Length: 110
Image 1: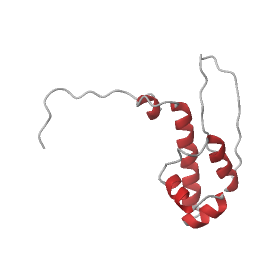
Image 2 (image 1 turned 30 degrees about the horizontal axis):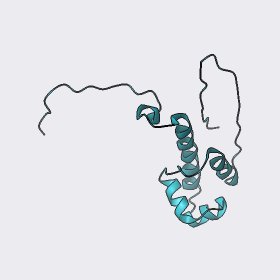
Image 3 (image 1 turned 120 degrees about the vertical axis):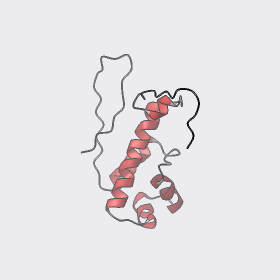
Image 4 (image 1 turned 90 degrees about the vertical axis):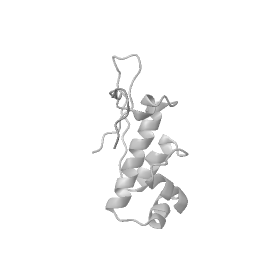
């Protein structure tokens, strides 16, 4: 394979790919991706079919298919949390003061 002319340059990411790409609402998008990942893991561990997952979540199978491909975009953070509770998970939201100008969103798996 031929090498490209010039130097390659790597840039360290911020930890949020959505912010690195300059997308709007990057913190919210990262949170949605993290919640969607938790849903994906639960469905896979339980070996649920998409139809079974759809019944548990109260949505249609094509929406489950989209969720399992990390396409949770149309669902709000609140709705994704409702999906997790429907799958037998407790979801806790903790609000604490920050010393930064802007706070952070975080998903902690228990």
